[in-house]
Length: 175
Ligand SMILES: O=P(O)(O)OC[C@H]1O[C@H](OP(=O)(O)OP(=O)(O)O)[C@H](O)[C@@H]1O
Ligand code: HPA
Image (cartoon, rainbow, N blue to C red; front, side):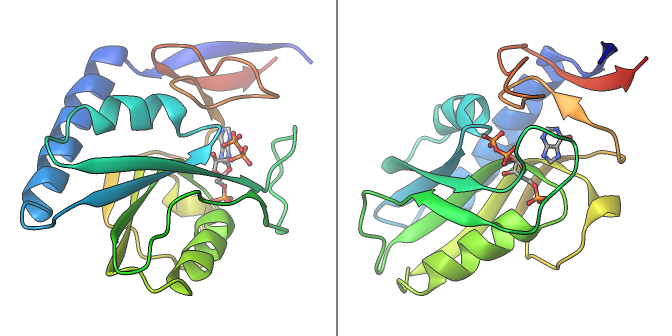
């Protein structure tokens, strides 16, 4: 399939937004002993790496793998946990860090799954939000950019596992 990529959010705007988000999180959790940032692999890696360095608090980093999409642009509703956390999150302040929220199924499932472990608090932080695509309601506490219903890649986000290493967020245009 032929496609081209058009820049949607430049690297400089991403860096500025990530700084702002980090500052907000730092302020909100300044009285917490420790926070745990939970990244969902693989899309959140680039955002999480940058965000974590903008938060001057005692933070642990852990990861989960959940399956939802596959290689196509269609969402599938089955969400399975393929790799669980290593950390015990009971009584801890946890922030799920995501690259993008689309239908909401992934975060709904992960949120329910983690709440069963009784964290002290559980918030959700996403770089990108596509509100037009939402099918289930999930409380999102930190949002970088709301974007229209376009297929995006870059800054950790893939199209069939490609383009995650682009320094900007681009949109895929089918030709
Ligand atoms: O709101 P939803 O409709 O559930 O979609 C959002 C999810 O889809 C993408 O993950 P993907 O399964 O492509 O895995 P990846 O993180 O490895 O790219 C993205 O990273 C989110 O986790
Ligand atoms: O726009 C997107 N791009 C890549 N993966 C995704 N998963 C949900 N939305 C997207």
